[in-house]
Length: 414
Image 1: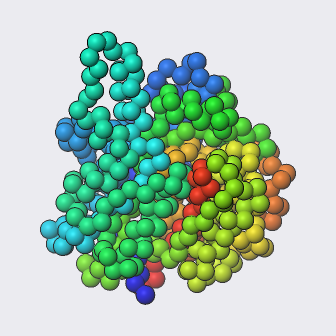
Image 2: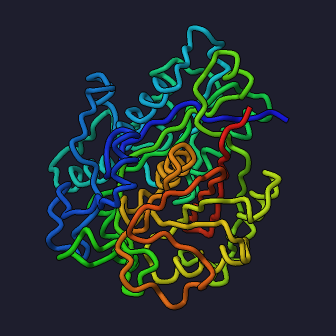
Image 3: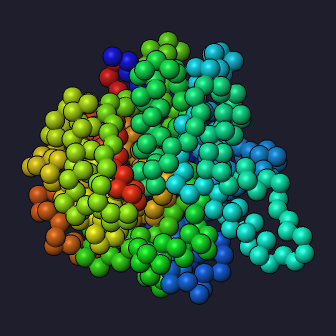
């Protein structure tokens, strides 16, 4: 069986614009939340979010790339450049058709789309649109521009499965390598959804926190007083590579991908199935593919957005999938990063890989009063990071439409 390993990582997040900074702030339990600065949100019911700070695209992007791309693509290019550099891969030493890009996003270029439509509505006489309007907002543009930037001529496309998208991209890259259709992929996801329409739309669904006077304590998965999620933004990039290829070139290996799965709730447009039946099956199928038992999983990064229904439904699914597994520890890192939608699973995959390499589990912050509906046998890491050997780490990501996805990483052992 072809093995697939992770040889490169890159991140742009509300907790830092490098993997190192992101990881250190995560295990320190820092919050990326604050008042929205992207636009005047004073009239909105939700006025807080987890924005990327001090982002300097020129560190990795040239002037034309910046001019011709939406912010979500810039985040994608930036994190992909980090991961590619980290991997040590050189396209000149490979067949360019052996390397591809599978890159996800839930919304695409929202900032561009809103801005152009607003200009049209406000305009007079002849309507005018930026010639880059269409390519800038297309959801597949990061995968295209990443492939152009590095000369990668293999499989290149964008899966979209709402907030499960980051996992879907990783899963597809993993499976294409296993099928022998590529030697390596840059994969992950990016999102830049802190815009009026996006914030307003999710707020209209009553899915977002309104704790505007206390942003850093607003995202609080598992706490009985949670009142919704916070929007986050950024990108996470991974280089997945066929093991023998990585071994031959002496690559640094962070972890091995050993299992993936997807299921569908077939229940509701926006609400999870309350019993978590399909979500549990996603976790069970992932473990089955990896050939491991529930007792072998050390860490689970749960989807845990800080919504009333979602958190409990997911933990019900975890209980179904794991039973009384004695080794499992759980945390919800969206308490710190907010919810990056299509990029969420990508940055959470990075955290899972880092737990394996550093033996520290990041916390779920802001848990003051644990919800009594949470199954009592589940070990949730709250407020302070936990030092623990992690050999196997799992990541869940669920999306509107009932999409459930799970990815499993294992400590690399040659």
